[in-house]
Amino acid sequence: MKKMLALVAIILSCVGVPALAQHNHDLMLAVEAPTRNADNKARDVYRHPYETLEFFDIKKDSTVVEMWPGTGWYTEILAPYLKAEGKLIAATFDRSDNPPAAYMASRVTALDQLLASDPVYSEVVISEQVSERVSEIAPAGTVDAILDFRNAHNWITAGPDNIIMAWHNALKTGGIVGIVDHRRGADEAFQPGTGYIHEQQLIDMMAKHGFALAARSEINANPADTKDHPGGVWNLPPTLQNVTDADRAKYLAIGESDRMTLKFVKE
Image 1: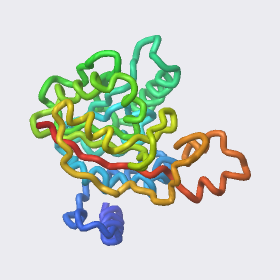
Image 2: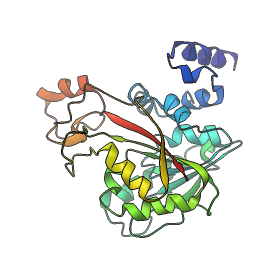
Image 3: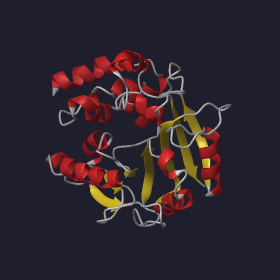
């Protein structure tokens, strides 16, 4: 334990972000948890989980809904962080036998396998969020924060009203919604299917349902992302979808996508 705390102190001393001055040791220990997948941990340099969760004001006693957690990249951090004093609710894709998209079933299966893999996940609560209706992702007015990582580009064109209304119902007054997603340039036309969306498009949609933009951050920005890739964000790592050997080095050099990081408050 002394070695782990020493490592935490060294890491924190190297992070040049004023907001980290108070040193959330519990969160840093969760980020450094030995139960995390090594490949997932390698993405920290692009996704900045410590800084991002600090920006969203996630406390160890918070009740948090993780919207569409996929295979559990953030679940690996949130579960140990919230286990003792807080609560993590994983609002998964449609869990029926016939989800709207085939990939949803594989993500649900992968998350279930993760949750069964270690006792650190024993307190995670499963719920479901679908875009076809207003889901009850948690009892009304009980949630401190809802986190949505790289999902908005999917639901913004498929049932966004139902998604956001479900969030509004679940959150306490003053509760937080934290969204990270691939950012289209403000002066660039929206192109469905690329994975990139406009910040203002999302801000306006959230405002329509009673959420005020509280803050935005450049924690997950990447100015090297030109956003003109033929396969959209999926040409970039870690997916590298349909990338030829000749182009692989180019996309690896860019890194993961340029991302907005937005914090909303329920009014």
